[in-house]
Image 1 (cartoon, rainbow, N blue to C red):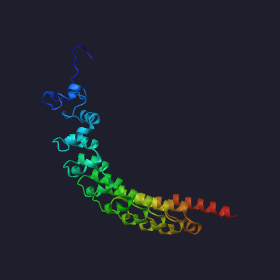
Image 2: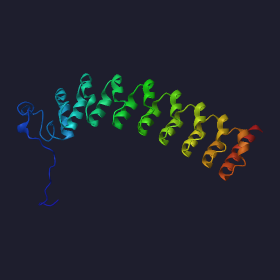
Image 3: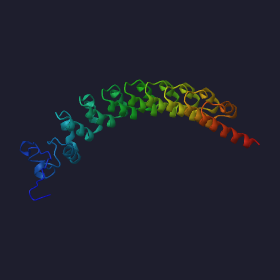
Image 4: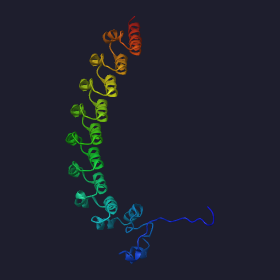
Length: 252
């Protein structure tokens, strides 16, 4: 940097002359322009202000600036959060979704913001998760599929989204995986072939994708392996033969 170069300070500054805390907090040094200030439109400064003065958060729940309301919501006592449940800004509701008691979460079940509903899916008690299986957003349903009791996962085996069904295939009880042997996604069928009960692998011996049949060959019982020795794919035939030889040699 040369002597003629200057550095422009872009730190947002509020006008302390207009601030109601000028003669109290500012005078006592417990707020500071450009650093710890609730009047500036700066999330960093506002957060520092409420971190230092959490008791003031209640005064800003109806503030015109969405970020000021959202940050205030982080510092409010739980008992004072309920009036903010209908806040028009999603950033505020996202904070609330993390903080409110579980019994209030259903207030956000149909929230217009995906991130709010994801938080609901992440926090909702397991016994209520089934209420979210038909959410319009695939990512919300992924969270549901990760937490839904395995005995109820069969409801999501035919979900329209590959990522949701992949999650289901990884968690569904083995005895129910027969529901997914004909899934349209090859990667999902491979997961099924890796997890399904060995006795049910016969359902996948004619799969149209060789990589799925390869997974079948790795786990197939002897009677099924014998049928795969003539598979149309060389890799599958070779794997079936190696597994067959390994089994027969153990018996000798």
